[in-house]
Length: 374
Image 1 (cartoon, rainbow, N blue to C red):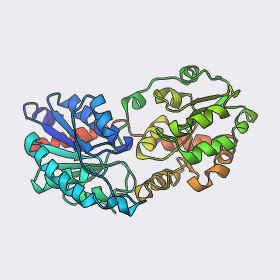
Image 2 (image 1 turned 30 degrees about the vertical axis):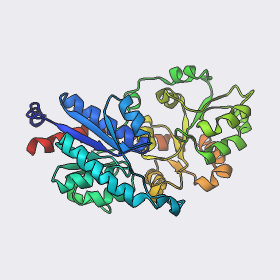
Image 3 (image 1 turned 90 degrees about the vertical axis):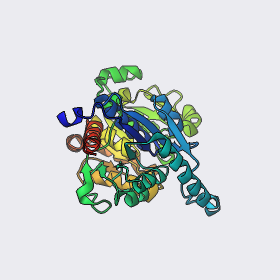
Image 4 (image 1 turned 180 degrees about the vertical axis):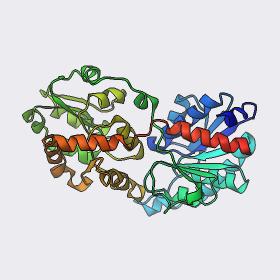
């Protein structure tokens, strides 16, 4: 820490680039907050893609953001990629202007296609660049950028396939403080949803938009919850909310909402959790330390959600049901798990071993140490 104190008077200006999903945006904000905690005078500028969620979430967190006219490769419609080369060229001109004006001390990339032109240009100007890879299977942009990056921070080990070993540090994923520092008790969580303290509680989440396969599996087996003396906290996402509203009428054992803001209460209330396996979901669930059944989204880039889930399954820290099998197998897997206390305890113990509370602080201190030596 004494090394870091030496840079209090340095003019630290950091660009953080990337976004597209919460799995990229929330770690980026957490890293900025951690650097600010150590170096209150540090200045930040975020760079994202116009029209993406970072353009809303970053200002809400109190940081300035510039948007690039860039888009990713559209795998579902090749015709939509016609204008992509022009957008990429335009984004490099925008990045050149941003870097020339802001004059960053360092640039951090958190993944997402908007991070590539920013870090690539910074590397061409010999500005120190840092990458945070949140998934167990690295994205293509990060793999290409990793060759010239100053340091690479990964969520999990065994990433030498993607990055130079001597540059790679396993830090885990930065998690929202509302989760990592939560002191909500189980009873407080249950009471906030109006649920019974004597029943086993299942939390079902599928991301902010919900998960079609998970929602349909719950809907098909809705009666099995009351029949097995279970209660349910169900985040449906907006697309399925209207359908679910009709299904849960008369089911007092079910709390259903399109989006749950206070996730720390939902996590505290749950005995078992059903979830997608995006990087941030996995990081949060390791900290929560409850038995989990993952249903990976099969169309994520490089199928990284399946890789994320399998990483935990191989360590006997979670169960997994394939998306295509969810409608028939998910609830049966849940009921089978609930009959096996030994399995539940084993999963809890093993997932807790993978929890990292201070990833944001580790990353912040490593970046500041490099800046100090520059």
